[in-house]
Each structure stands twice: as C-alpha cells, then as structure tokens.
Image 1 (cartoon, helix red, strand yellow):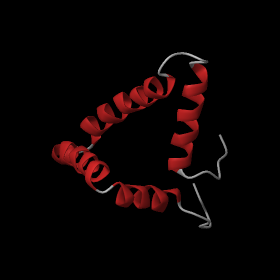
Image 2: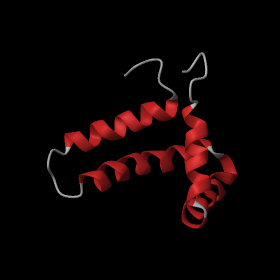
Image 3: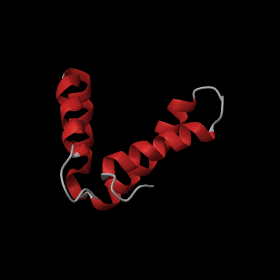
Image 4: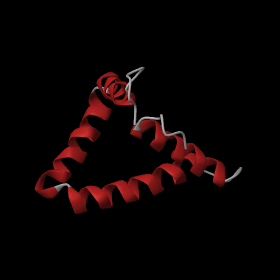
Amino acid sequence: MDTRMTPLEKVEALYAELVESYGEGRDREIRAASKLLMIALLRLKEHGGFGWRALVEEYLTMLSQDPERYQRMLEANRGGDKEGRT
C-alpha cells in the first residue's frame, strides 16, 4: 500500500483487495465488509474502554438517520490534499 495514503484510504484499499480475493463469488462485498467489521468490533471492544459500544451505536444511528453527515465524516477522515498524509 502507498504510504502517502490516509488510514481511511488504506482501509478502503484493503476492502477492495478482500473483495477481489473472493473472485466472482456470491456476496463478495458483504463478505469482505463483514470480515473488516468483525476485526474492527473486536479491536474497539479491546481498546475502546467503557464507551466503545456507544461509539458503534452513534455511527449506526448516524448512518441510518443522517447518511449525508456520515459521508461528510468519511470525507473529513480522508484528509483531502493535506500535507503529511499518513
């Protein structure tokens, strides 16, 4: 992966790689996303302290009720053309 990519771009690239690894398999996008979600939830539980579940619920609520806000949050995390992207 390109070291100039933001962390979010690296995750998106990994997702694309996982999707590709399933070839023409059925539900390959869902399967790839599920694998990333499984690991993400485990790491949030391990490292997120008491509030990890509230954070997950906040993201789910936002995605469901205000998808435009969620999309803006993703765009902000991509970092645009900021210098020193890592």
